Length: 240
Image 1 (cartoon, helix red, strand yellow):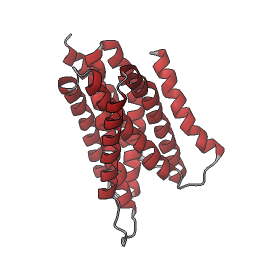
Image 2 (spheres, one colour):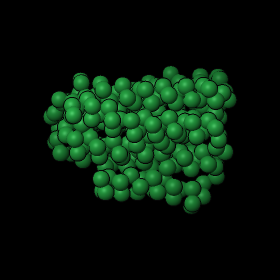
Image 3 (cartoon, one colour):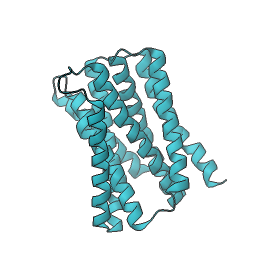
Image 4 (cartoon, helix red, strand yellow):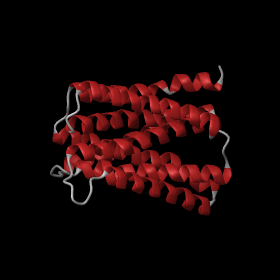
């Protein structure tokens, strides 16, 4: 079986997870508290992906300058995205504008995930499988979070499902691009790409998912769902 055949099979897991999360949220739109739970869990899963997959790789490469450059580029991109998607100073923030900003950031996160899958399989089958399994759980909750944001902004079920399908297609395309263009990266180039991805994922956690999640009254049980998501992904990584 060729590398592309292997990727085609395993990439279906996170792709289906994104679609499943979107369909579930479209058919049964979550209320504020359930939406906060989804966002807390998604934030924990994404944070665990950064801590368990990206940071160890970057530390092993030992290229601090290029890590700084890649991380700075990732932060800059996310700040530009935020400036383009948030309402102007004179405009009142609406659910639609806030939802669009979250969707753009989730889209970038999904693209980064796809690139990581491609890079992982290029590095070796075992690494690729581990990353794919880890990101499948993340993809499920990101699909739920994206669909919830759309539903909250008043989107129809058809639009919610269409956008979710688009995110799934983006994930698959990014995996192919990661295999073809980035699969052979090593050294400073790989360090910069991993740092860029880490910055984008951390921005999603701290500036989007948790900000939205904290709009409802925080309780110890609600806060614990963040750590449950984090722990779940760590356990999956240890078992695979």
